[in-house]
Image 1: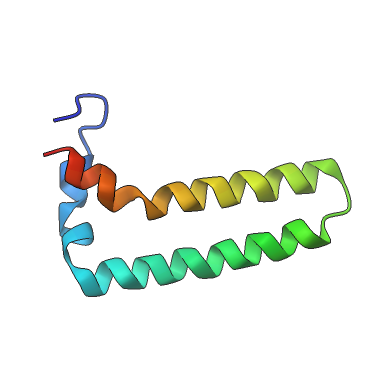
Image 2: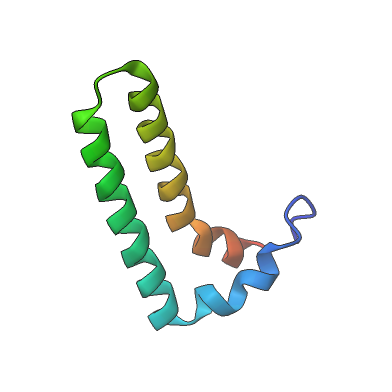
Length: 72
Protein backbone atom coordinates (compact mmCIF):
# COMPACT_ATOMS: atom_id res chain seq x y z
CA UNK A 1 0.00 0.00 0.00
CA UNK A 2 1.15 3.53 -0.75
CA UNK A 3 1.98 5.04 2.67
CA UNK A 4 1.87 8.55 1.24
CA UNK A 5 -1.80 8.20 0.38
CA UNK A 6 -3.55 6.19 3.11
CA UNK A 7 -6.94 7.50 1.94
CA UNK A 8 -6.83 5.59 -1.36
CA UNK A 9 -8.24 2.28 -0.03
CA UNK A 10 -11.18 4.20 1.44
CA UNK A 11 -12.10 5.29 -2.10
CA UNK A 12 -12.40 1.69 -3.32
CA UNK A 13 -16.25 1.64 -2.99
CA UNK A 14 -16.51 4.58 -5.40
CA UNK A 15 -14.09 3.21 -7.96
CA UNK A 16 -15.39 -0.37 -7.85
CA UNK A 17 -19.03 0.57 -8.43
CA UNK A 18 -19.25 1.02 -12.20
CA UNK A 19 -22.43 3.13 -12.13
CA UNK A 20 -21.04 5.50 -9.50
CA UNK A 21 -17.66 5.70 -11.17
CA UNK A 22 -19.16 6.42 -14.60
CA UNK A 23 -21.39 9.12 -13.12
CA UNK A 24 -18.37 10.65 -11.41
CA UNK A 25 -16.43 10.61 -14.71
CA UNK A 26 -19.41 12.18 -16.51
CA UNK A 27 -19.39 14.99 -13.95
CA UNK A 28 -15.65 15.45 -14.42
CA UNK A 29 -16.07 15.58 -18.22
CA UNK A 30 -18.74 18.26 -17.82
CA UNK A 31 -16.44 20.29 -15.56
CA UNK A 32 -13.51 19.86 -17.99
CA UNK A 33 -15.64 21.13 -20.87
CA UNK A 34 -16.66 24.13 -18.78
CA UNK A 35 -13.05 24.95 -17.93
CA UNK A 36 -12.03 24.56 -21.58
CA UNK A 37 -14.69 27.09 -22.56
CA UNK A 38 -13.29 29.46 -19.94
CA UNK A 39 -9.83 28.87 -21.36
CA UNK A 40 -11.00 29.71 -24.89
CA UNK A 41 -12.63 32.92 -23.66
CA UNK A 42 -9.90 33.99 -21.23
CA UNK A 43 -8.66 37.52 -21.69
CA UNK A 44 -5.65 37.55 -19.38
CA UNK A 45 -2.90 35.22 -18.26
CA UNK A 46 -4.34 34.71 -14.78
CA UNK A 47 -7.61 33.35 -16.23
CA UNK A 48 -5.68 31.14 -18.65
CA UNK A 49 -3.48 29.67 -15.91
CA UNK A 50 -6.46 29.09 -13.60
CA UNK A 51 -8.41 27.27 -16.30
CA UNK A 52 -5.37 25.22 -17.32
CA UNK A 53 -4.75 24.23 -13.71
CA UNK A 54 -8.37 23.23 -13.24
CA UNK A 55 -8.32 21.05 -16.35
CA UNK A 56 -5.11 19.36 -15.19
CA UNK A 57 -6.56 18.58 -11.75
CA UNK A 58 -9.86 17.32 -13.17
CA UNK A 59 -8.00 15.01 -15.54
CA UNK A 60 -5.94 13.71 -12.62
CA UNK A 61 -9.19 12.84 -10.85
CA UNK A 62 -10.22 10.76 -13.87
CA UNK A 63 -7.10 8.63 -13.22
CA UNK A 64 -8.11 8.06 -9.60
CA UNK A 65 -9.45 4.56 -10.28
CA UNK A 66 -6.05 3.43 -11.56
CA UNK A 67 -4.36 4.93 -8.52
CA UNK A 68 -6.80 3.25 -6.11
CA UNK A 69 -6.38 -0.10 -7.87
CA UNK A 70 -2.60 0.21 -7.67
CA UNK A 71 -2.74 0.86 -3.92
CA UNK A 72 -3.73 -2.72 -3.05
